[in-house]
Amino acid sequence: MLLQAIAPVPEDGTSRSLPQILAVDLDGTLLRSNMLHETFWSAWGADWRVPFLAAARLRHGKAQLKALLTERASVDFSVLPYDAEVLAYIRRWREDGGRVALVTASDQRLADGVARHLGLFDDVFGSDGTRNLKGRAKAEFLVDRYGAGSYAYVGDTHADDEVWRHSGHAVVKSRSRRVHAKARVHRSFEVIQPPVSSAAGLVRALRPHQWLKNLLVFLAMLGAHQFDGETLLRAVGAFLAFSLVASSVYLVNDLLDLSADRAHVRKCKRPFASGAAAIEWGLPLTVLLLVSGAAIAALLGPMFMLVLAIYYITTTAYSLSLKRHTIIDICVLAGLYTIRVLAGGVATGIPVSVWLLAFSLFIFFSLAAVKRQAELVDAVKAGKLKIHGRGYHPDDLALVSQMAVGSGFVSVLVVTLYLSADTVLQIYPRAELLWGVTPVLLFWISRVIFKAHRGEMHDDPIVFAARDRVSIVCGALILAFAVGASLP
Image (cartoon, rainbow, N blue to C red):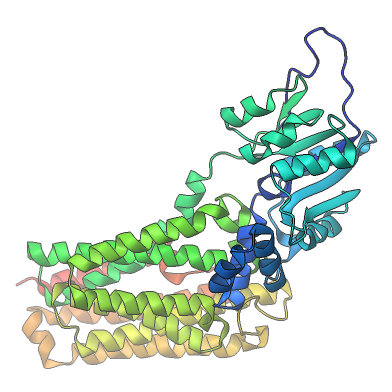
């Protein structure tokens, strides 16, 4: 976007020369993120004790908190979401002979890391563990360092009001009229239009498309052919509870995986990784979703709440640690799919058959392996020696592929054996039609693995299936066979 100048000269028509020094804020200005939150999530991902340590350190001041998180975090400065417009503004300022200083409330070590990576700053100043360089403290520092009215300042929030008040030129990266009004005390005033509101980014961060997985809670009801109103209502409640809680976990997973996602060819576009969603909204939104999901679960009874709690604890452990361990991560992913099936049975009071449970375990283990297979294929194509944030190496690709094929074909075998059981004749009047399911399922599993092998697979096979025309046709055929077999 172009810079928009507002009243660039005084009302008397005389020219006004800009200051020599341009001071630039980091969080929300140069970055489409916030380093306090970045370091918190990075540190927490490495050590589960960090929230408790952070709470204790906060009592000694925010600068001390930032120092602690900086010490424990691992930040890749090369992949941070820098704002292209602000970078362009800085480069133009330097080309015109001006000097640029990075002045931020983030810890000095983080500011130095950003400055080393960009190579655009003559001076670099940040919080030092004692002084939190924000608001009035930043204004006083800049006045002492450069003199009142002797610097231009690029900022983005009300916290910068005092800094703008003592500057010689105000540059505002914000769409807020209230923020503009505070900075408009200068007749030399510019606006850098930031990207549109992050509300859409936050919605995308919830991954509503992933709620398709939670349709698995309906399998117990469908398998038992029990479609009364109360059963359907309870299944819908289970779907909503799992969707809300799952979204809270997706948020945590994305926030813990920021560096890994930014290094990934597709995941770098995720809202928090790209800066499309405000990172400071991550934690409160996570809590809101979790509480809402728990409230719905409470209406479905204590056993369902227990199953949902097990799901939440397991998936949180996966985000914090288990996903880094080979084989264990695939087993956990398969279990998280399967637990949705069990939850549907608990919510509706319908026992989940051994056949459905066995099929679920094998098919979901296969799909979890496909997920890792797809990541390994991307790593091989990119020439990487290891998947960032995972325990796999490119050489593991053949073995993971074999796991996907073997488990997938066993799931087809389970279906075949089920169709030979006497119980099928009691449920389906025309059970012979169900044999059409086997070749379709065999074809679909083979195709999914083949797509992953070619690098054409989405990060999640379930999401791929929901968008893939061939997969949709296969699903329709399976449904047609099942309905036909149910007719008298």
